[in-house]
Length: 199
Image (cartoon, rainbow, N blue to C red):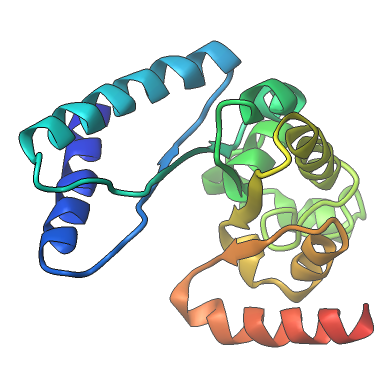
């Protein structure tokens, strides 16, 4: 699957290059749980890129980045080592919330309202980033990742990227970008601007 996906992405980039349009694809590996796992997948990706470049000798160079989603607590803890081989991190906060809490988003709707009503959880962790647990892992992985690679780009993707409270937290820990559903982009931009003004 990684070979096919890499081939599709890079062939599109090569086609763009040939038509005079320069692009910089960013290939993101999901659900990494170990440093070696990322290295193994990155090796497959690089082999496919090199094979494609050999088939297209008229294309001198395509700039690209290879990074990973941080969606599992273990990956957040090992961020420093993973970052040494990654160009960027994107926190998949939907899945990171699921794996940190041990709650499926699909099942959570059945009992989360009563948890919030009884103040077991202050807010729905799938709507507002949990600063104490998930947020701690995001902050830890950001700091450790940048310690392992000073050029590492770090951001989040998921529904938290369109939540004003979560965006404020992301700015506080100096994340560089957010990605969210298209309909949440206006809210995200406004929240980011307001947070920047407060800062």
